[in-house]
Image (cartoon, rainbow, N blue to C red; front, side, top):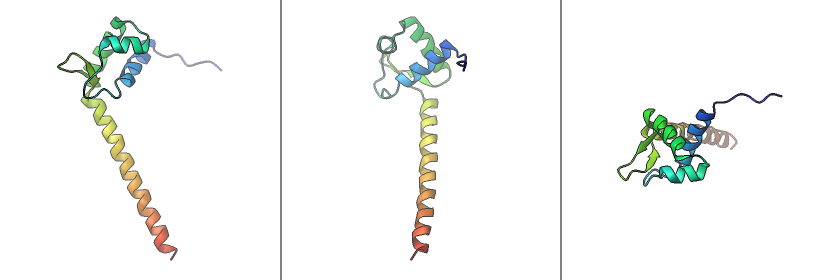
Length: 101
């Protein structure tokens, strides 16, 4: 089976975005990202600039990088959807339990 062709720059951007996880408050430096991902600081900078342009990352006042508002909104929307689904499941379970008495 042939492996799908992917964009190496797109893959790098997504790896940088995932590496921002856990750095919302204090951020992470370009150098730390480069070391963690085995990439050059220049490549990390290009990826960060792309993420910043799309609202998925931001540069903090301390010069470090963090997840952007758009990325956090995606996470919150997912969390809200899962909470709604769990509430619906709980409601159905309660009906099943009430009907079995």
